[in-house]
Image 1: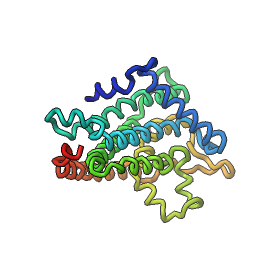
Image 2: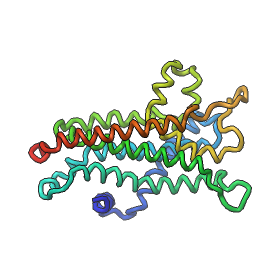
Image 3: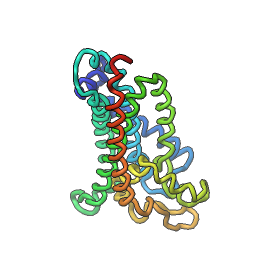
Length: 276
């Protein structure tokens, strides 16, 4: 199913797989020009391009997983009507296809990191074990939450056909609710939003995943403090203080939501064939 969907996405195109590299690269250039150059969001932040693109990898992975998972049953109604198979395969396959498309973006990110600072003083890059573990945890969070949402939303979308448009509306907001186009310290300082909303902001699992992957890819490229106040020269926070503990707690919550998603799916899937 994953192979079939990947082939169908690029069927009839001249560039084929190259679009997996072209699309994220052009998206990165757009965001970087608008937020890093025109609006000056990168001031006081080292390697803003890496900061931006690292977050973009997981945000794109999450948004594609949720939107494709929501549409997965309707998109495969012909197969569902002809073959007897576990219907959970469709939202799970959508998540795996989105993961497959995240790989080219990850390759671009690694190349950018190597060019901007991963080489260090030696002839070869020595991996930051903690950072790579943090990035892996970020990917796990997106996989779990994206699959849970896909399971629940795909059934609801069959019953209520407008639901995918509701999901898309909220998905469009996701990139602005994570420290990707702006640094985390803009949220932590309490000047732009009341400090009482800080805990609500960092309770977002996508924001947590973005900070985890930035810890793995952006943070090691910095020479000294990654974020510095351009006026006072004071060091600014890069991530939430309890980054790792929050990540594991959110992973546990995500696994509970995944079980709930499977429960909802199993209760509703009996009505899927007749509604399709």
